[in-house]
Length: 185
Image (cartoon, rainbow, N blue to C red; front, side, top):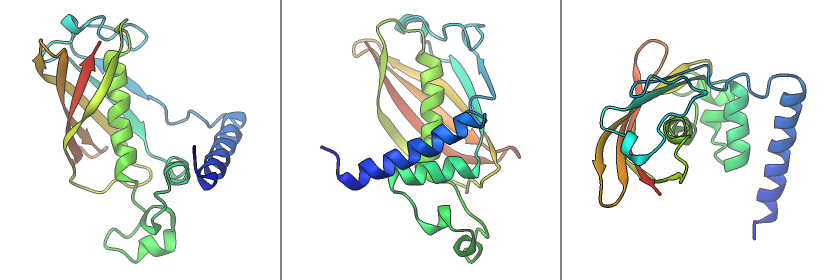
């Protein structure tokens, strides 16, 4: 059972999201662009139809601009409301000089790229986890991030694939890196 505080927080976040939806802003930051490097398919098409098509070198990109509402909604839903994320006055006193996005929000964008990659696998795929996540530079509200997600190895017996991930901002600066492990059913 969820703690009552989390239920209230989640309801508040959902209400804000509904207000954004009604005003036409709910999905302003959704996938602005996506490309697939292994199968010559558009985002509306299947990225990988089977484990066999999820070959080393298969890749996708996911691009999104981080806005203040993303950071604030994420803080409400997760409880990660550290002042560096949600308080302009406090953030101005830090070495960053302004708010930074939560690292876990950036990891969420990594998951969006994973979902793009495996969208069309009929049996489905699941995240087994991440290895070596590193946030190597801050992400600020207004940054446009591009997640590059590329299959770097496969384990045929376990039906797993490992993807190398890099996240770059609009200036080409790498802000995060990770390896992601997928299990394909």
